[in-house]
Image (cartoon, rainbow, N blue to C red; front, side, top):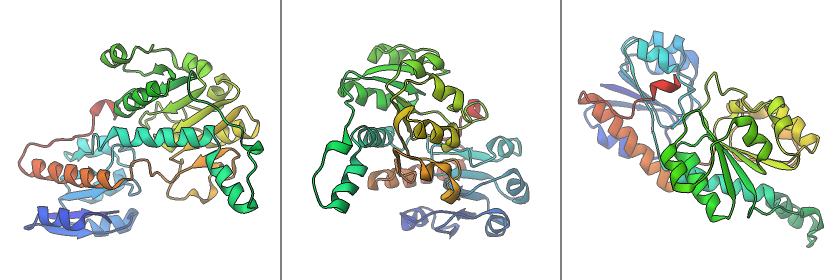
Length: 317
């Protein structure tokens, strides 16, 4: 069986050793369009990461393809519904450790609230201590609005309560057991936006969530509030976020994602004030890479045995 992996830089030997009788082709970078079609020609298995776009055209061109495995939780870079309709199984990594992204959310939140990167750069550049430009915000007793209470959102709530924050949440699918555990209310999105001091986004990118936070949403948010986005860039209208920052409607924002991460050079957020950007690195720890490789191996093995696991959830397609 021919298997093609793109964007695979870590634990290559682990994956190759798991399938000694198969033809394993590895690329350490994203592949696009015709290049991907040529590389995956004749492959039964295609494993990608977030910057390899598997479009309808690519799927239709790969006649022998039986399984697509993305080594990520999100799968908006794959025409998954089309693939499934073509009889191709599509798998993802349902949970490589929700806590690790939640930890990064609070790293961003604290960095924005206390202006840490700006203070660090100032001290190193000016060679003096001057705290006056770096007035901060406290987290304790502030209201955190969590938009999306899946595994990552749930982990964020647990950490927030440890900081002494009040939590309110919005989700199309309300998790009653999580609500009972932590005692937070579910509210309409507009109310979450208007009542929160900090807002963090944890929803998948779908046609319904695209630009769910746009100009109208920013107008509803408290003046002086903070936005954190570690979900997908397309959930937020980048130009609207920049305008909210430039007008000082927001205190600041922290994002781990952009709308077009493959071509970030023209993103309006790169010039936005009071914004901290990390390069989609919320997941990126030594421990997570091992878990991703292990889950990918399990998905392929289970597919080969006729009992596929870790399929993408149909309700998001």
